[in-house]
Length: 497
Ligand code: GBH
Image (tube, rainbow, N blue to C red; front, side, top):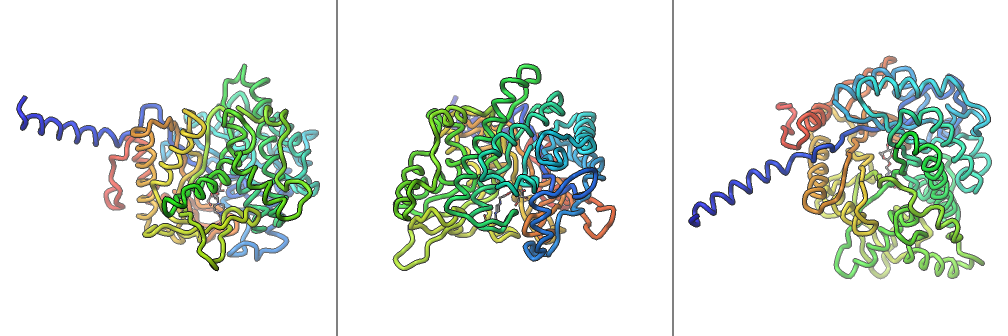
């Protein structure tokens, strides 16, 4: 072959490779997610008792930007059939939803199961399965029974057993039909988010101790629930159990900031992963050391960061069937300059590093104050995880874009397009075994302290309509076409969709 032929051939190969490269591997699965408190409503119906979010928003409505709450939300408790219709319209392979603990166990304890609540999820699960959509269940998405909060919630070591008891009830009720479980949604936010800011229910502020005890007990609770499944349920049901971490990607500003950025990643990702996924288990060594020194410096007689016993390390180590994470945004990390105020987000107060966290140049901003767009962040995150914890199966359990209005939906489409492209690159170029992607969120819903102002939905919900009419956005059409063609080789402009 002469050189012209060679050039032509390689050009053809490059083009066909590029075209092929936009398709997802066979078996890759697409889903969308919601969470109980954000969509269900019916907060005091059907035997459901008060959860932390009910109390938090009823006690002082000003805690939420638009002074709203989840009392009715999308009314999915009554309109769940509509949600299934939407999932089917999108062509979802799976639908991720969460179970309200206090709807199943009105006392918080497993002595009493609320049949009406149990039936609600059973019907939802059956309805999805009838349409060939896999139900993926999150056991806990931040709505703790208030009765358990009154006893200290996630800072009381007894919660480890309470959660295991709750998990047993769920495995017994639904284990025959659920193949993927998530124990906890974003323990980083449940613990650091809650105790470092006070802006999430239950509105407690205890950055130095609360966040870290919560961190420990969340890991133990997850581990017990995982082991319970592994020993008693997996042999007959063959499902998989994991937890969904919240991962913000951190890039160092310069070479000099690399070690600092690594420490920040260990603090956010490692503190909720290392004990489970690393070979040796326990806390990330760099964090444990840092926290011991800091505790001493602050005059604590023992580390404010609780240690693990060897037995606890063994209990938690290896309690995973896949790695699940939610990802939205990135930050840049650098050392603070002299006289400059340190950043605490999202680490809270207790970490005390000489650091500054900022957004990258040219990063677009979504509707929330925390939301910056950096598509390569998701790929870097995947590479980091694989390097750190090995060639695991990865599932992205949330990713999506925040807007205020969302009628003109081009930004959301672009976000999905660009983040999915990076996921594809991680799979094809970096050999990361990503098997699933989940859009947050199916329908507009109660966005925690942003209330209903901030919209993440593929479907718009009319919250003034008693019927809570759901209407597809352009991004819904886009996502449906990606799913249908199993590829990103589809139009992205509103008019062509
Ligand atoms: C996820 O949390 C949740 O799982 C989901 O329920 C939620 O609706 C979705 O994302 C969209 O927000 O960190 O101090 O700047 C994402 C984690 C936690 C990130 C709160 C933003 C804002 C406060 N989010 N955080 S701060």
